[in-house]
Length: 315
Ligand code: AKB
Image 1: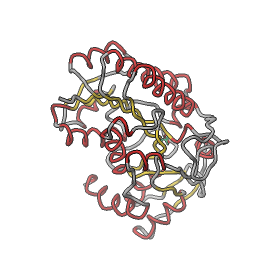
Image 2: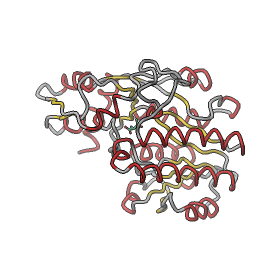
Image 3: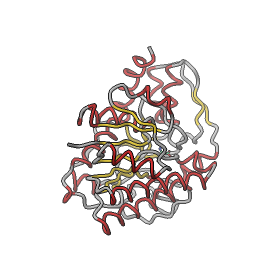
């Protein structure tokens, strides 16, 4: 029987992924974990444990006690927050991954999922349709940790046979949970402002094009990757993954027909420099070839869906 542990489950990706995993494996087979006690309220549909991923002994005892077979290791500090304390971000993002990989080896876990990011690319990578094997010289603390993490995943697979699988996520846009500390967070916040009847101030320039993905596609990609037969996984660092690319101005232009009074202003801050170093679009042919990846959502369908569903949650 599968037993799934999700770390950082209360985050933007974890909130929705944990729900999907509960649908797939059943409420008794999924354990959501987070460092915040308040997070428990988010998981009436599955079990919850308080867990600090930096505490390797606590992680080991949870995996052993619960006979965990799969870990989805989502706990992380995102790009913008990482720049405010690079050493702390490196420790959390790196040490926690190494704990999980080492425990996967020791406890013979079936599978591990770990999200990487487009942040592994840097100013010297090609900007358009950035390929899987493009040069990578990340200049952010977050990107450096993600790139090192990818190498560790490939190493643990090659040296110890750990079945760790990973995706380089673009900016993720969901309406069920707020992101925190990312460079692409503006693309979530803008919907909340529009629905609240308030103007929106973008911290990125109007023409900053970034790769993005609607959350249902991110969940679909994660499940497809994790369910693919081992022999189909040709990339053991992390797969490029793409759905859409847009600028803040294009997203605003997509939303404003629903709210003709809605206004946007631009006050770029330090996050602009982070975004400027990232690709504008991604070539994800390996994911398409190896496990038949294709996204369901382009920007207009995503906007329509969020503006239909978010008010129901807020009611
Ligand atoms: C961030 O902005 O830090 C993340 C990412 C692209 O990895 N959304």
